[in-house]
Amino acid sequence: MTAMTVNGRPVDFDMDPDTPLLFALREASNLTGTKYGCGTGDCGACMVLVDGEALRSCLVTIAEAEGRFITTIEGLSRDRSHPVQQALVAEQAIQCGFCTPGIAIAAAALIRRNPDPSEAQIREAIPNLCRCGVYPRLVQAIQRAGRVERRRETISAAPAPGIDPADAARAVPGMRVEGSPDDLGSD
Image (tube, rainbow, N blue to C red):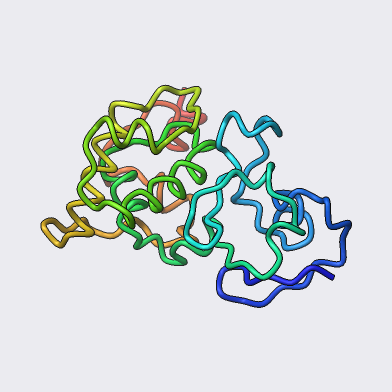
């Protein structure tokens, strides 16, 4: 058994000690926010906090994580209130979302160490690959998260998890949206 604390809860993994932490989190703990991208540590999609340090979980075995404190994207903030999560949404620095959990984790570690990072410090601290190319907005979002962390700015909360898709896609009354249910069968 390999024991560690994951998102504030004690966890024992009855797995081969050489199992990458990524697979223990995703498969045994059902924490699927941590993504498998490349398996070689190049993309950063699997980034988690290990004792507060952003590490690629595909390169850390559960034996190496024994006794340590692990934070996944699910444990960063259950209600999406972490300044990095808020700023990523506010700055529209999310496209497809696949790389976002790893980026949010790396940015949270940076903001904890340095709540006023320069663009160069951000680019150095965020090694994550984003195939959608959100890098300019990402820099703005991380700087904004730093301002929130320093209490120089506030951001309205992102929508709570569990919003009904019909509510999220609802059109303004009286507004016609091409391809909406109102258009079906109106010929």
